[in-house]
Image (cartoon, rainbow over all chains, first blue to last red; front, side, top):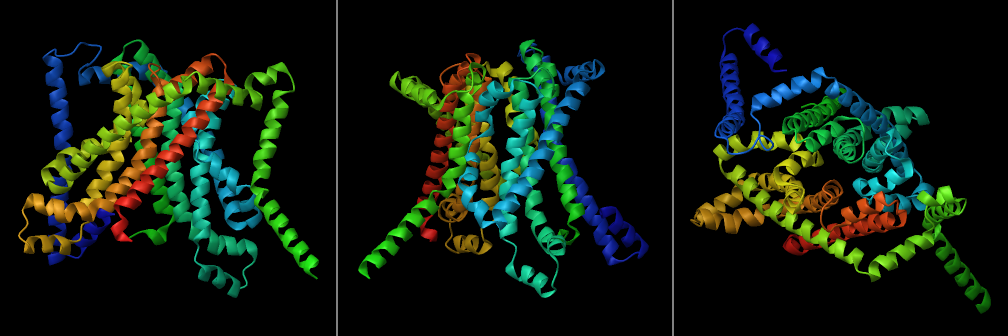
Length: 276
Length: 264
């Protein structure tokens, strides 16, 4: 985006606009530097504290040791394999939960009968925290793949269903009336009116659900798993390998961040009319 | 004539009662299915415990004080964590909103730590603080800290400039400006933060208890029950956690409504 505008400014030759443009970029560069101050300070403090031997090796290792641990678990295949299986679980559970959530939400929003018969049960079940269901699900499904998929399914289904329900309900009546005035068939009414009008809030709900599901998955893997990134961290903790635990913390954070950014990007790409 | 009218009124009442029962059909069906499965054979009764056994477990755990003891443990811990998280969150959020230096220094670290899934921090905290109370309270505090920082910051930042100007006209000092103008104006946002923080703190409390299996708490009781394959006790715990969660959120919304009653 900014590359385009600065190129356009350069093409238009020297003008007041391009001058402003340069100043704006300089300012933003300074801001980027400002953002780096505190992480760098933290890194320096971390190194100094390690040098001073205030803590034992089980409590604090130097930043370089974390990098070495990263190389170690990456080369041994522990990290890539764990990541692969964790992300696989997330994708399956999340896909099932999203599709189910959109279907359930649409049903509840459009059918009075569904609202009457399913609504109360739906509203009761969505109050149950996913993590509080984990011990029950362990007894029902064991600690295998089914457990993780069911748990992610649960933590995705309800937020997506609620977002869909509200999105479809809040479509302005006028939009639907325009569709009727144009005598759109049901499919075209959905395709041209209901879908575009309800997709932005649904995508927001999906993004929140994805973040929560990732948190829940990591927790469940810490609790009961023989594979996955959470299990790698749990083993690290049991062996007092703080370096491996820190690698896990950083990687799970990076993944959480990328998942969120990925969906924001999707929102941006799918909703051209929402761009500023 | 009178009889017919009476009969019609009676019919309408019956229909209305029956209609209000429609929402109960699905839960009743599910419970019936559960009960049927539990009575099929011993293998099924292992996971699908009969409902009467769940009720028996509830009354047993209530009468020997086990449930209340663990419930108290969880609630105390959650309140302590919530309180410290809210206080620190408001402090840090206010600092970030009022000082550019604080914003530049704190925001990058706040934003990056926030990306780590909350309970993913438990192995690290376990190594740093041990598996005891400190780590558990810290996780709860952190869970409530995040939304409080964000909402305090937003609330103070979005105070209408005209309100500030009124403060300047009155010649308010820094503290007076905060007390008389900024605080009341950002109160709605603070309470939004609180309403987000309460369920987060409760989930963190339960998750922390599941992961750090020491001390009294509903999560600990659940984990013991899971090891002993006591589905009845687990169901009692899950139900208690859900009900308490709803009650706490309701309490938080009542508190907000009361504190913001001047808004109408």
